[in-house]
Length: 104
Image 1 (cartoon, helix red, strand yellow):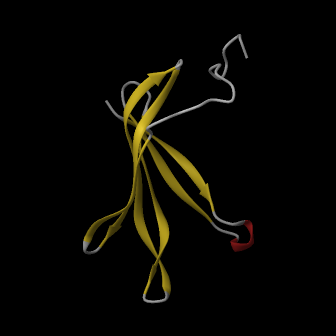
Image 2 (cartoon, rainbow, N blue to C red):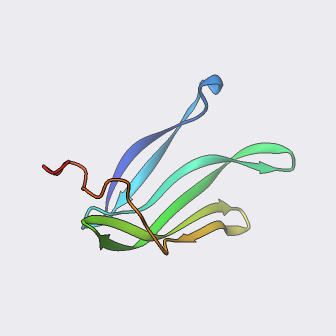
Image 3 (spheres, rainbow, N blue to C red):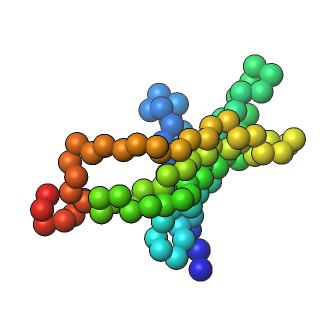
């Protein structure tokens, strides 16, 4: 069973706006994706369009559960437009103790 949690995405303070979004979490508590409406520039105008950030291929590294792949996607009338895909190939911590552990 996948759970969803509402979230608030803040716009720059001078706009006076905030846009809600939703975190989608799998059975293991890992965020699989985040959905929201964000402004997309179309024909010199800013238009609200559905947007998704996706995370996958979680691995445990030094006690941390990390998504190794990420993607950012606009949901446009013409279909999905993936404008960012990234993959973690190397990672280094400035503090290698998981948050909330007694070692911190």
